[in-house]
Image 1 (cartoon, protein in one colour):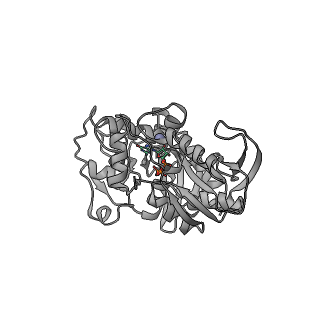
Image 2: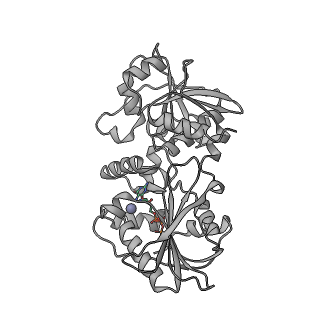
Image 3: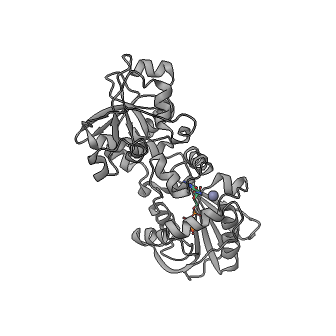
Length: 352
Ligand SMILES: Nc1nc2c(ncn2[C@@H]2O[C@H](COP(=O)(O)OP(=O)(O)OP(=O)(O)O)[C@@H](O)[C@H]2O)c(=O)[nH]1
Ligand SMILES: [Zn+2]
């Protein structure tokens, strides 16, 4: 296992460079469709024969699911290349946001995937790279990086997280606060904890806040993240002591650009759950073992958790943190996020 391989492959995919994915059942060479330009595609696939690899949910939208994909939703679908599938058509196949503007007619032909485990690894690395899970696949040409399925799985292993530094940080909710930064060697995103008040031996009030650039920074009215962040800080400041974890899990783990694609689909009428699925991602791609590891490094084993999301309670407990109590975090709706909050309640089990 080369711990650098996944970081190199993620970087290459984001730049539109070809990557080899290896698994126990074989290997495949892929290039992100969204990152390809005419020059890189010609170098990767001089004869225009590279097939396309897409998620099974994307294939379903394109009416292309074969029986095996229906039985295993994590198995991608291979579209055989036809002369009419040029780079622009491939880009439209990759991106469901374009469906209204460029309806795709086909006919598409599904092909056989020689190395299903390697193909599944392609979907996983797409999420880590924050790109659409859609690739050109199958050339014999040179690649910029080579990575195994195991190396991809180990990439965001929370065990590699460590405290990088800490400092006092008075904030508007409390002048008595300390910021702690966490890093892991390969992952560029640094997670943050804000410890508020003085440790007194009781379980702290803890909030797991997933990054939301639009809500946290821009004041987006589409979600409840900004108000939840501030309400959580105030509730923590009112408690004997507490910890806010600011987790770099933008868009529930699919990254900012993919979240904004989900927003574009929401503009077309899909809800937050269906938008994620149409893009080819899980409804919630977060892994709360990162949060558990951070709490462990802070010496916190038991918490009073501020959340409406039962999955957070289950995720933390599974990772070894005792959730002594769940404290609700209710925020008044506005006309823009009303449907989002109803969807959270009705489709992802949030207790409001
Ligand atoms: N993919 C996607 N992510 C979204 C959307 N709206 C908000 N998010 C992300 O969802 C995350 C916010 O979730 P949280 O507030 O941490 O948690 P939660 O699951 O809603 O549960 P609570 O603890 O009850 O708030 C952030 O990473 C946001 O960027 C959306 O429509 N699509
Ligand atoms: Zn948000």
